Length: 454
Image 1 (spheres, rainbow, N blue to C red):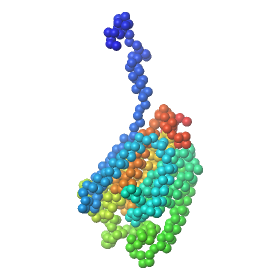
Image 2: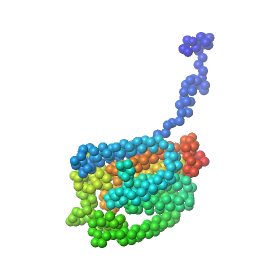
Image 3: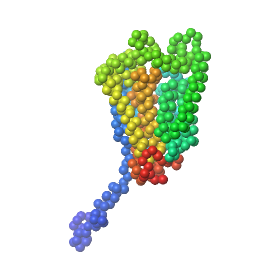
Image 4: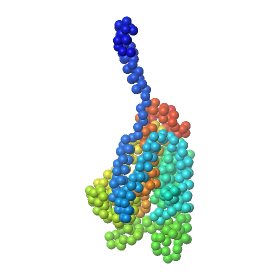
């Protein structure tokens, strides 16, 4: 109806209906806008860190893959790597759009499934770098140890979130979490000592984040130490009895199943160090060329793609890719990448502090600690601070299973940042509680609790 018709119907006088000094139509539009809930968004800083890691991954993987391109398409390693990064990106999009409460529902199932895959790799798996740690499924090689680490983090977050109280973790939660770590950590032993140590470190960090008392933590550490010592002695004696006579080569050691001897040899060579006059052999080849690569980098590096040692350094595209990064970008680039991972941990801590519930706080911190600890272990091995072992650099090194698992960890973190950060908003907290199972509603006592509804 136009203005003329309105005037005729009202006797030539136009009537403007107002309520509280505001036209009715405008007031309805304002109310609808106010009542429409804001669509939650994931943390932009986490997205920024992830995108920067992708850029580093593509550039440096191409630089470090010179040993793989001989006789093949020069871009083939990069294409294969990009396919896994793309699949990982799809996983991130799917998980960030999934409410984090669903992860607790499938935590036990995922953990048991990953443990089953781990046992399969120990029985019928294929050897990679001297350890029986992978299985072939439909033409794809899967490393269950990488999957186990993430599923244990989700499972521990579920256990600790369910057993949280103002004074820390309950005794029941402590016992249950400790048993989970023992079972999964012991199962990882054959797949690599570094994986076991990394898992224990991540789990202990989650215990500390959960406010576990020092007395309880000390008891757990003593228990872990005793069991680890027993396992080491048992494994060493078993390996010693199965060794071949007059064994001298690495291949015979692997064939005899002497992983304990391998561990001891790596530690002894690490303590002895590498001298300039030492001949290069199968034992020190990686260490020597990794040091040469980093020395070539200097302060500002040779520039991306100008690495000279990528053609000689074994596993330059995976376990030693940080050496190539330092050679290409120098000390400055190596420190910048380290700070990027640390900023990921700091941002996760900030988000966890704002969570109203304990479970999402444990979940995002567990995933962040897993990513950052693995990155630190990789860097420590490459720079000579830790004994030689195989650990990929998260989201950068070549390796399909590692990329997909770490992408899933990023997706879980984004889900928490999207659905759990409430900033004291009572209405948002109530909506969040409706999405959570009853046993996952324990409050986050380390965060902002002033406005949390009971």
